[in-house]
Amino acid sequence: MFTLPTALTWARILLIPLFVGVFFLPDSTLAIADKNLTATVVFVVAAVTDWLDGYLARSLNQTSAFGAFLDPVADKLMVAAALIMLVELDRTSTVVAFIIIGREITISALREWMAKVGASRSVAVSMIGKVKTSAQMTAIPMLLYNEPVAGLDIHDIGRGLIWIAAVLTIWSMVYYMRRAWPELRERKQV
View 1 (spheres, rainbow, N blue to C red):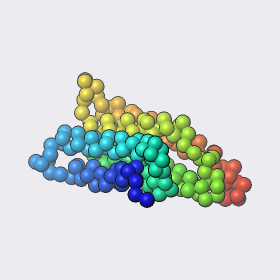
View 2: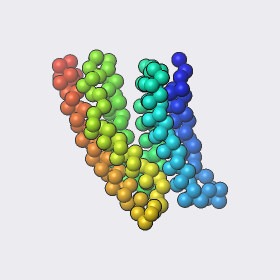
View 3: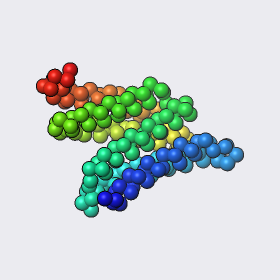
View 4: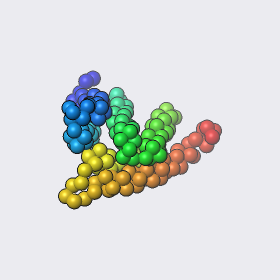
């Protein structure tokens, strides 16, 4: 069933080429400061649609298995695209990008397996995961914008926050793995 929340999720996925493409426009077409602003706005719009599609799905009772699958995929694609662009622009470390993207792939696979064995509740989203996401979703726009705001060096603040997000990423991955460990041992998967 095609719903408004699902349409918003698809829109988020369709924003990714626009987001990436902005940085590949010639400087004569769009100055770097304008590229930064445009990419930041696109990323923030995508983040808002992430919140909005979840809110609408619940409030309009339009939740679906497909929407539950597609929403995190869209989120991870947008974050991965942003991190890769930030590495390309030398605004964050390859190590940070690897940690965050690697964790997302690992935990997604773990959640899928846990759902198949009927134990998905043990790896449900936790507070540490939410704090990690907040740090990450604050840092990325700062690093994309990359210009001072009201005398504050947004780049340096964003760089610090993305490292905090990387540490929280490792912490949350360990948390989820520890939660899944009893199930893995019981099924003799380790």
